[in-house]
Length: 112
Length: 112
Image (cartoon, rainbow over all chains, first blue to last red; front, side, top):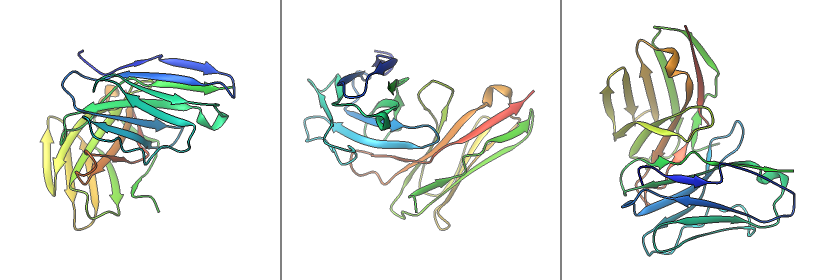
């Protein structure tokens, strides 16, 4: 596609529920990243996928967070048993290595 | 201490002013320096990309990197109301698939 597509754009969920966030990167971009942006905070790295290599999960804040990337393309970030502190904008980006990122518009997650 | 420090502002200037945005960093391994612009409820978009020290100019925007001082700047000449956005500095050492560390962002308002 022409850009990075994320869905849903907004998600309101009850505390304790599981949520899935989807990212469709730019075709031909081998790397995909998930970041989290909380109010007044910078972008916090979560996870990175590159081709068929093992993902870099060093930024995932707890074992309630997981992500997968199928067929080297679409990625899903899953948050289990959501907590109020999980409320944030979740941003996905893709790039060719050595180039800057192209971001999606993000998923705004609100846990009530 | 954060790896990347950026004054969150807000910074308010009149139309036509020269704007200076700055970041400091602590990791001397950073080689790639970027500025992203983020409009409200949108993902960040890459504005400037530089490698190592020096200046880069693109239209009304100039990026400067001083690796000896671990200090980077973005200058906006003849600022316009459409420049009102949050500006995030970002940097990478090129490893980990170009994993990028972001500043917290500076909110800029350009008044007509």
